[in-house]
Image 1: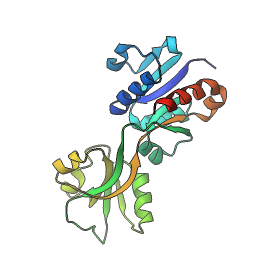
Image 2: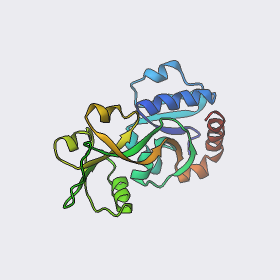
Image 3: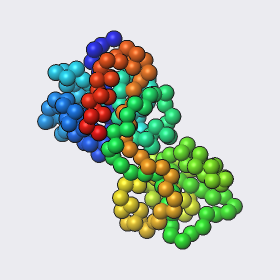
Image 4: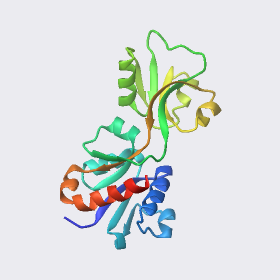
Length: 207
């Protein structure tokens, strides 16, 4: 097994905050790292390889061992239920999962529908509430669903709440707070425990 430690990272805001955290932990990442359009970036002097992926795919890469470790939102981990170890709460990219819909509207009592890109989380939440709902899986523009009459409610990630307000929606319930977590492949943790433990220690000191 290679001595290179492969890290799966989500593109976007989490990537930017995670890179800042790694630099604080004294990992020497080159300046061009931030603006690179490459999907695989090698940082040979640190013995690291980065795979840039969609946030929902990070845990999949780690579970299947193409990445040793990764940084993934708790929302993704709850939804995907991948076979990975969650070693550290990095306390970055704070947001939360919430139930939202048009203001002052009740759920349809006959066949309530909930649109979301988190079908497993949404189904579990409403089941806990004793409500039987039809889950409609969407991949984007979730806010559109109640506006056009596709659903009574949505379950989605909320950061500032601005997107909900701009689309005339109200938040009804908060499901769970979300931050990004440091995850590891179980086999990699046995084979590369020293490298992984060192990274966890260094990150723990700056979280």
